[in-house]
Structures are given as C-alpha cells and as structure tokens.
Length: 366
Ligand SMILES: Nc1ncnc2c1ncn2[C@@H]1O[C@H](COP(=O)(O)OP(=O)(O)OP(=O)(O)O)[C@@H](O)[C@H]1O
Ligand SMILES: [Mg+2]
View (tube, helix red, strand yellow):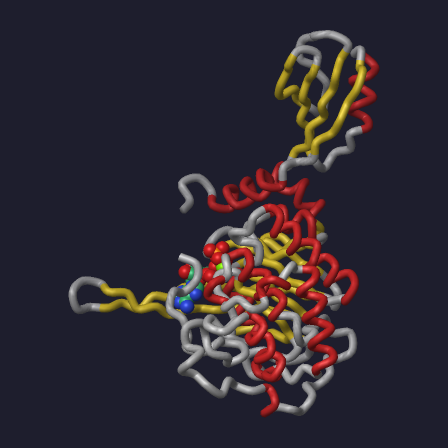
C-alpha cells in the first residue's frame, strides 16, 4: 500500500478544491489571512532541517466480526537530514518506506508524531498556510489543478490564491509554458489531459509563485521518454538557474542519476544512506566492469582484484569492486596479455539499489 485512497475535499496544502469538487467548494484557505512575513531562518540554518522525525499512524483493523484491533504503523522513524538552499536531493526507497509520509510532513499536511522539522525557518504543520507561499509541491499520483477548468483558468486562480503579482505571474507562466510545452494545452480542461500532459501542467502550477523549495513526489511516473527528458531538463534548469531547492522522490533511478548528486535512501522509515550518488555506487558490493579486447581468443584472464565474468571470442568482461581504481588492473592485464582496446562500465544503479534493498530485507524478508 502506498497512497491513501480517499481524497480530501480540498487540496491539503492550498485549501483549493480537490479535483471533482470544483463546483462545490468555494473559498479556499487563503494565504492572505496570514500576511505577516515568517520569521527569517536562524543564521546558518539549512533550508530544510529534520531531526528525530517520526510519524506513527494508528490504524483500526477488523479482527473477526465485531472486534476491531488498533495497530500502529511506524511510517517514519528517527529521520534526520539537512538540505541547504540550492541543493537538489533524491529521496528514494522501496514501496512503503516512508517517502510520501516525509514529504507530507515537510509540506505541513501531516503533523509529525515526534521530532523537529523546519522548512525556511518555519514549522510546517503549525504554519502550513504561511509556508504554502514559499514551497511548491507536485504529487505525481494526484493533481492540484481544478479538474473541470481549462488549464489557463486553473493557473489564473492559483495566481489569485497565491497573490502573485501579474507581471511575475506572466513571466513564470510564459517560461513554464515554453519549457514544458504547454501552449496547446492551455484551453483544455484538466480532466481531458493525459497523464503526462497533466504532470507537466502540475509542475508549472507548483512554480507560478516562485517557491524557494519544490517537493516532487514521483513526478515522472508514467511519462514517455520524451516527456521525461523534458521534465528532467526543466528541473535541472530550475535548480541551476533559479537556484530553487528540490527534493525529488522517484522510483525511476534515471531521474536520480541525471539530476541529483546527493541521494538519501530511506527504508522501513529509517535513513540508510545519505551522501553522494557516486558513493552509493560503491556501497553494498557495487561492481564496475572492465571490458577488454584482446588480439585473439584466450582463456579467461586471471588477475588479482578482478574476476572474469564473461568471454566472447577475443572480448572479455572483468568485474571489480566499484571502490577500487581501474588503472592498476589495466596495467596488470596489459603486461601479460595482448591488449588492443578497453572500456569501463559503471555499476548499474538499478542493481546497486536493488541489492541494497534486498540486503536490508534479509533472507526470507518481506
Ligand atoms: N494515512 C495512513 N494511515 C495509515 N498508514 C499509512 C498512511 N499513510 C501511509 N501509511 C503507511 O506508512 C508507510 C509509509 O508509507 P508512504 O506512503 O510514506 O511510503 P512511500 O515510501 O511513499 O511508498 P511508495 O514508494 O509506495 O509511494 C506504509 O506502510 C503505509 O502503509
Ligand atoms: Mg509514496
């Protein structure tokens, strides 16, 4: 199970009507009611600060005909991390790890059971509406747009809610429309958009008010390769040129490889890795592969520090630990073998992560 299936009547962050309720729910919660500027973050405080963060859900389950039992689901346990302004961080983990729960706490939709959480100097759950003007959020699984309205009108409403000055709104919208290819979609009601079109439209909606931080929860889910490339290059540019801080959750490790230097891995509610993506390559027994072309067919090369995993005619594949350097290996092979050419393949990130998740599940894990 991942996302709860029930839909709130209003969008949990902005208070806007949820899809399908556009006609019924007027008067969204309005950030204008909290015009006071939030307190500035303490000097040196990161843009996002989480310490000892926990979220426990209490669920009632039917046990027999009448009896119900209460069980606790520990979705997030002792999570701590800091994100500096301008960083782009991947937040990954297997299904049910606690990623969406963390993001919901970061937006203020969910109140932490325990721990410290500050975003732009503000405690999200306590100042949710105030914070809404400084953050943007995209849930790939759910739209924040008005289902029945043409896209253009959805944006116009968002502008009013966030009180975006017209010139700035126009500039931001034009930019998104151009870079995300939305021009032809502006007159189309949101309900008629395809998944990939809707996702691009949602990303634009999250950015019209120039948020300092953008949370993306699976923004490339179900996108074709071209749309994925569009979204990725858009996000890269947003981060590099506008300096927007981005926290990205995805199961598509291509997103991470192309966008994030730093990756935080969460599993069973706990952080199990936080660091450079390149370091993850070496974690959990990651291997690189040296592909050598010899002058002729030879028996498998026997060299210390590597093992030959495949031989095809004069070509051989040698696996070695990703934490080791390739140069001594190449020198050793060249010394004793007629070497013509070589290349090095980086470990497949999918395999590295799969091994990491599997190792933590252990034998007979679930
Ligand atoms: N509202 C809720 N009530 C009860 N349990 C919940 C609720 N929301 C999430 N959970 C549980 O908390 C755990 C973490 O869920 P979460 O949605 O954060 O996972 P996730 O990492 O986003 O997974 P996925 O990759 O599948 O989206 C899961 O065990 C889930 O069943
Ligand atoms: Mg999720």
